[in-house]
Length: 83
Image (cartoon, rainbow, N blue to C red):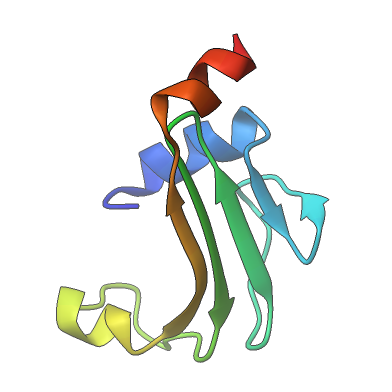
């Protein structure tokens, strides 16, 4: 997420899971955690490799903090099936 407010909204909607369980935005993430974000048009699953000590991280450095396990854009038929 680009902003913490976006991440909070997704957590409040129940689309974010950590290690298989739906979480609140206040959840502390640890190294090794598996995070899943399942929105209407995309499914993303990644493993946390490093939790940064600084609050702000550059876009380039952020890529090195996680390992993408699965990244799937949903097709229009997948979206229609949800409706």
